[in-house]
Length: 267
Image 1 (cartoon, one colour):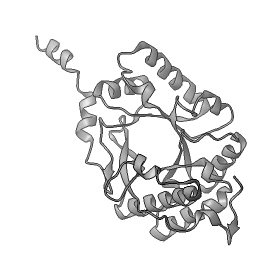
Image 2 (cartoon, rainbow, N blue to C red; image 1 turned 180 degrees about the vertical axis):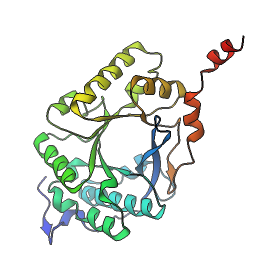
Image 3 (tube, helix red, strand yellow; image 1 turned 180 degrees about the horizontal axis):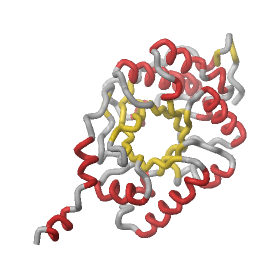
């Protein structure tokens, strides 16, 4: 696959309309320690809420570049229209970025047009994308940082997003995969792995986010283990072209003693 052709500073392959419609759903990333929404992740959907899998089935190799650009533009436009008050996190396909500066022109232009601050953009590297050229991926990360973006490595711990990537890449954030998070409150093996990640994160200067949090017990254990940034159905499901309902009640519940402790205290 060759490099993107540049026309007037643009990536020619990235230009043009998609032959199908897309929209975005937004799911919050919660800062449990601060009891507030830290950011929102934009998740692609069909125009009637069709799941991401159905949308991605229509993305051919020929449409890959345009699809990546269309998702970025649509996410920023919708976030601006919804008056999102926190940073926006957008998934990106590293194999669709061959000249970072050229492929970012549409992102920069829509941000300027709607008044979206560049420092409030986070780009998540999709782990399902196998990128054999790690040096090129590091070039992308460095180019994004120069502009003011932050970069996250998604679904860390499974698929292609494993420890060896950190020997060469320096993302700002790591999103721990649901496979590590599930039942972490009662699984000693997962607890050992998560604690190892927490210990590793500080000297590497990366921030951990636990994704796929579905139970209060998982959220509470992760917070106590040192991971306040969390995302998942426990807090809120993705909302189609809307911001999630206030998750304050779910967050506050994490600070209350578990039911068995409350009942014991009443005896």
